[in-house]
Length: 250
Image (cartoon, rainbow, N blue to C red; front, side, top):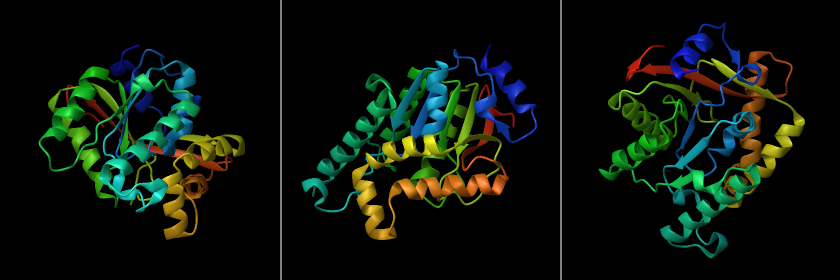
C-alpha cells in the first residue's frame, strides 16, 4: 500500500484514531526528526509499536542539546563535552529500545546556520520517509518551533508525499489530537527506563523542577489520557498533516 492510499484511508476515520489499533503497512518508512536527544523517548511507546510492526525507523537528532547539561555534570564543562554526554545518553536509550545505531544520526545543527537546511534535507532525501514524526509548531520551546518549520519546509520544497505526526509535548501550547496511542503501567515503566538513561536531563529536571524528566513526560501523557476520557492511564497524541507533492492536503 502506498502512503497516498494509506493516508487517505487513515484520515477518513473518525478522530482521534487509535494508531495502535490500526493496520499499518510495514513497507512504510518512518523518520523521527527530534530537536534534542531524549525527544525520541518522549514518543517511545508509539515508536516501539512501529518497530514491532516491522517498519524501518530512522532517527535524526537535530541539535546537540548541550545547553541542557549543567556545568560540571559528568565532568563536562565545554560545549563539545556536553554534546558528547547527551549523544551517549541517546545511544544508550536506543540500544535499550532495540533501534540499530546505524539508523541514528546526530546532525548538531545550530539554528541560523546555512548548513541547517542542507543537513536535514539530506537526511530526509536519504530516508525517503512516508511517516515523519516531529514537534508541533505551536510550542513554547524555540527549538521545537524551528524544527517543525524546517522539516515542513523541506517536505514542501522536495514535493514529498508524507504523513506528518506532530507530537504532543509538555511544552505544546495547543494541539488537535488526531491520532493516539494509549498505554498502561507496564509500558510506562519501560518508558521510564528509557527516559532515565538521559541522566543529565534527569538531574537538571530534579534541580529545576523537583521531579525527573521521566515524571515530566509521563505526567503529560497522563493528562492527555484524562483529557480524552479514555480508560488507559497514559496516552501519546499527535496532530496529523498530510502532504502530497509538497502541498498540504489536511
